[in-house]
Image 1 (cartoon, each protein chain N blue to C red):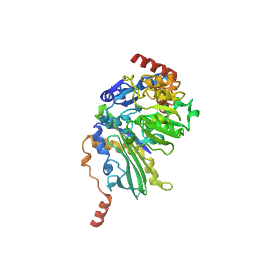
Image 2 (cartoon, rainbow over the protein chains, first blue to last red):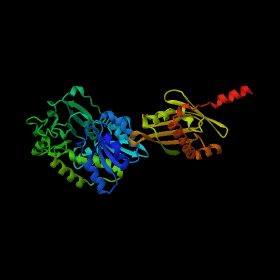
Image 3 (cartoon, chains in turn yellow, brown):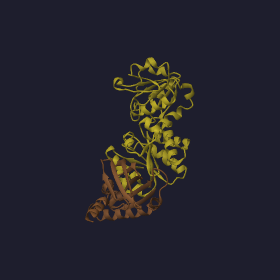
Length: 290
Length: 160
């Protein structure tokens, strides 16, 4: 259910216990499907709603979180960094990441957490022993790449190569890994020694599913590597499709989405998602949506 | 620690405005005699409990408009901490106030009068918040005068 902030103020919070995702725009969010499925699965008496909250209404929204019926929320674009200044406390790990995506209510206090890093790493678990301490190439230097950087540092990746359209304007530092920022004409020289390739850009996302940042011949560089796209719609981007055809192990963004959601849900309720049930529900939804 | 809740028939912004200035606390917190502003974040408090004078200095540690207001003691002979949370009701036309207040000594056990004061804090805070509600809803909050007990004492001593 998607509510405007006005609708939210008028009805939902006074009538029922709610969890929410707040962002703008928000109608595309899959969080309500995931979390409501989990709430129903565990027979938890609460509703999960999406609240369309433009940035200029954020300050007005916060007092509403003090309601007893407001149990917690997920935070998405454009609010992820803005909440840093608004919560009572920030979990130390979320402080390191610099981004909050989950608000937990504890003893009246609003505590900010980041579950994106956990969500990103979870699908890599089966492969991580083989690729840690190695080199990763990350396409994109926007907001999503921050969580990826922290995640890879936590797994002791020795070298992180960020690929940017404007590498000279991007300064990325690390005390743990060696960092390089290259442009789209340079990364190819570093591909052979890399084990992991990650797309954090929106290139290839629905409805522009036919787009890719890859140029002719570059896909061959992924042979035998792990290719990870944070995009979950479509489930297989051009990047993953081509990499798969050249023998790469591919991971789409759906599992990251599910696992970051599961971690949020666990912080709120103590339960993890019924993962398979939710994956099936999301895949059906995504397939019917196109 | 005392935690009391009250609903006030005034909009959120108005209630926040009335409660975010510690100088006004003696208007409704019966057991605080005087609060003086040192700067925008720091306030000196004064009260007498069982004939003993207590003075302490607080710093505002959290002040998010229309949402919450919190302070801690940084100096003095009584350690007070407080948090006020504001929740909009009825689409923001009414306001719920959650007021948490704690007193303790910095060192050792509280003496009898102070211990009794701390033990009676929840009941006192209930009364105090009722006073606040009446003053705020009757629009008489600004009319309440706060008198410095020391200036009274000095005056009576001079008169005598």
